[in-house]
Length: 317
Image (cartoon, rainbow, N blue to C red; front, top):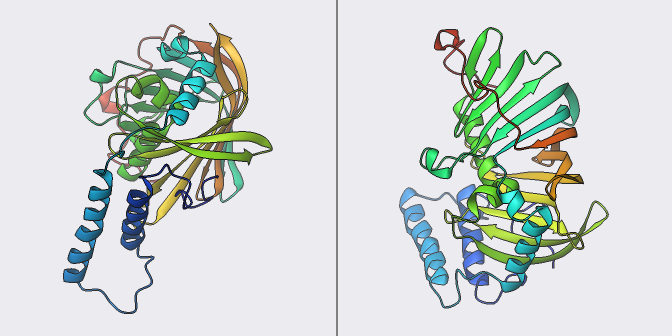
């Protein structure tokens, strides 16, 4: 049975026996904290302090019951087939990657920017990253002359022009960081071999006229990522996760879709098409024309310009 669309939560009965209680309790906790509960009157702080620990206790007790925290063998088999379909050990040995193509940016479903894009990515050893930060370095160059770019150094992001660089504001930096930690390609390359994930089977569905099968990945910090792969090829076609609006605490569903896979090198399959949606609206689209695996990276690609060229302390988008 497919997941409930638009909620980020599973439907009742689709989880393996023994996990349903924990998920229902967790849903109640999130719904209560988001203010969706149908309550007849105002709630005092003391009442809140009594209810929230009670619900949290339900989650804790359910999670400690026999059979909790155990991955589904069926889901683990699907995950292994997906890794193998992407290239197996060759995919998990990618150190650097370079993509070239065209990118489109949208706001409220309207095209606001388009550019030639070149993305250079490096996957350093996880121990080099700051605690809790994704172990990834990325530089996105825009335009034929590449006069503007965006740089991500683990958990810090910057916009760079010929005038200098500007740190991205904290809210957008947190959004980028959370997106990295949920991204399946990053999970498969950097996290699965080093961290204990719980993998659950969701069911089957039809996504963009493609037969899909879904699994749920839960990391040690209880981040939940739903992954949908093609039922035949087992290549990823869609991922979903829910984050919280830092101002309102309301849920925001983030979706990424992949298509047009090509063998790029050594049996590695890589998508030439990427689509991202947020709050149910398209925000980014990319069509790659060239993908290079493990190319040499020039010195300075993952370095900031001279500190004297720092344009401002913070930038709000």
